[in-house]
Amino acid sequence: MMEHMVSSHHDLRFSVVNQYNLYVPGNPYTASELSAMAYHGVLRPQFGPYYVDVDLPDTPSQRAKSVRMVADQLIDGSWTATLLTAAWIYLGGQAPEMFEAATATPHRGATRATVMPTAFRHTDYLQRSEIDEEDLRVVGGVVVTSPELTIEDLLRIGGSKRHQQQAHQLCALVDVATLHQRFDSEVPGMAKARELLEKLTHSASSAA
Image (tube, rainbow, N blue to C red):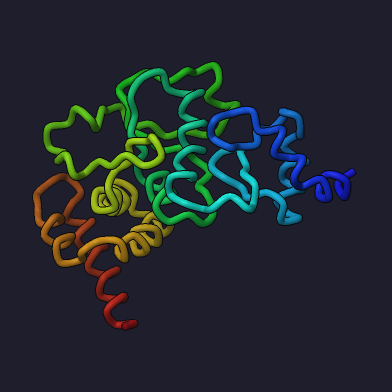
C-alpha cells in the first residue's frame, strides 16, 4: 500500500483541502502514513502534525503557514510566534516539538493536547509599550518576533543549549554590533543573556 501511495505522488495534491497547502492527518491519510511518505521523500514535515509536498519551496512564509494552522485550533484572538517557534520560521530545519507564542487570549483547552504541546506567555506583544514596532514582523500572515527580539528571548527567557544554538544561527541574519547594544539594558534576565551572547559571538568570530 505504501508503494502505491508513494507512486501516486501527484495524486496527493488532491487531498490538500486547506488554504495552507498542508496535508492533515486523517484527511485522508493517517499520521503514520504521512510520516512514512515523509520518510520516502514524498512529503516534508512541517510544524505540528502537518506536512507539505516535497516540491513546495521551503520558505519562511510557507513554514509560518503551518504554525498558523496550529494556532487556528488553539487560540481565539491575537498572538505572536516567539522563541523556538519564531526561530524555526526564520531558519527552517527540524521543527520544534512545542508551540511557543505570546497571547493574552485564553487558549481552547479542549483541543490543546490533541494538536501539539504548547507554552504560552500570557501577554500581548502587540500591546507591550516596551516593544518597538520593528521588533515584530508579519511572515506568511503570522506576527513573529523579529530575529533580534527572538535572539533576546531565546537567551534571556530560554537559555537552554537548543535555545543558544538557534540564537547562534539567527545571529547570521542581524547586525551583531547593534545586537550587543540591544542587550545593554537592565531588563530582568539580561545580564545572563549578555554573557551567553558574548560566548556565542566570540566563538563565531574565533571560528572565522
